[in-house]
Image (cartoon, rainbow, N blue to C red):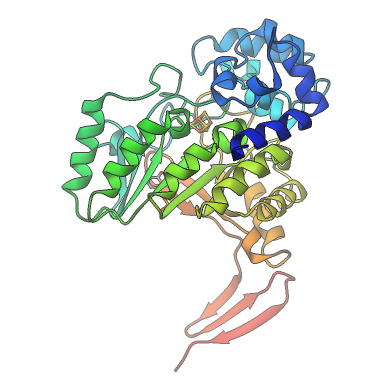
Length: 386
Ligand SMILES: *Cc1c(COP(=O)(O)O)cnc(C)c1O
Ligand code: SF4
């Protein structure tokens, strides 16, 4: 039996009771379908009627689903929906994926393109903000549309891939800029594309002499772990080193199935990092964030960034004061494994890039003397070399 077959056998045995409950709402679907990422994509939950079979919706949710319409449409892989708590509207999986009526309200500080990406785009698909690296938005489709998405201006199922001409123009730009040593492939979600399409992009980038490595930014290992197949990792292995940043927001997302996907990636020599968005009512408590970071280390994912939620249109119900993020960092650093402490950043609105925000550990400075405090608030003095 080949490894994929034996994996499928195991998965068949292991469908959880909640997965079985969700699959029952799809006519004739089998556990093997459930394990097929294309089946999961085709059968994403996009309507009120189907979601109603899975959870007991609140009026706010119904209002959101109807109201969001085609603008950042609701789209939830059945696997991800099976993680929802049917009776708890505060379930972190629900809050991230099911629109609420609050999305339709906007406030003064909100913007369509909060990170100013369109203004830093030399050719379609590329955002060139930092001298030595570039962000390459290779498509516009994701498995699940996160309700607070900073790229809600562009994401949607319309563009599964961009045109060949668009890709070639981006490659030409990177070829002609010898300072670019690092290309971050994101979207949309690059892993919604076929292996063949991904390989075309990655192999072309790797053939450019000054590109030292590529990285992939994705949420797929969380929302659609079935996509991480043996074929995919065998293809990625050929282009080592490839780094991967995975968007994780809550410990509840880290299931056995997700661990399996991350094991496949890590065993293939792909270093894994996490990116987390600080979200009100989802992960804005130090204990919840710490638990997430601990669970990530257990599946070999190194916490990389916590992002302040960008002021995207209709995001007020997700955003916390900055002091909440600083307090979380205060409760992590020193109190737990250093590897479990990511960098908290605010993407400077309008195009400032990632700005690190930290609790202040320098109490005072007098010429070459520093008065410092440690994580337990004890004072220490440090003197610069004379
Ligand atoms: C986040 C980001 C990068 C990568 O930043 P790192 O700090 O190197 O991970 C590059 N370009 C843009 C436009 C970005 O938003
Ligand atoms: S996966 Fe990323 S790009 Fe896609 S909707 Fe979520 S935050 Fe936006």
